[in-house]
Image 1: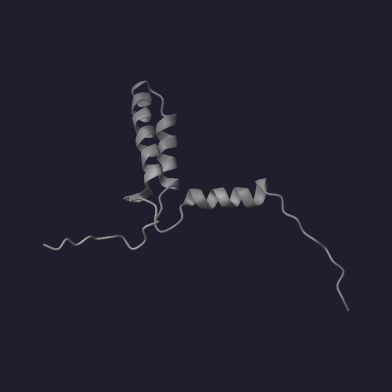
Image 2: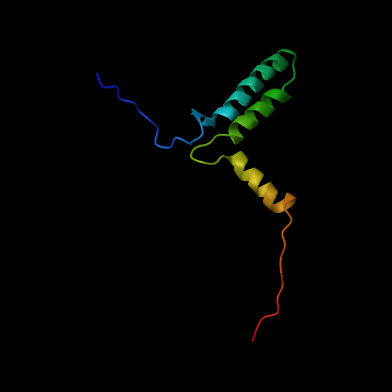
Length: 90
């Protein structure tokens, strides 16, 4: 009897559950649980924050909106840009 194994195309790819990476999915799951307890007490901010985080971390292909925003903040605000001015050679 010959056993056939089915491997994914890229063995180093991140684990995905539906539209989210596994890490993001776990964070969303825990945040939903906290949001439910907060909604019982009448606090809506946790549910809104969970919803916004879930939307920002949707990963259709390789990058999410959250990754893009992190890179943009790092480029424009946290990493200093250096420019060198040189005299043009004639």
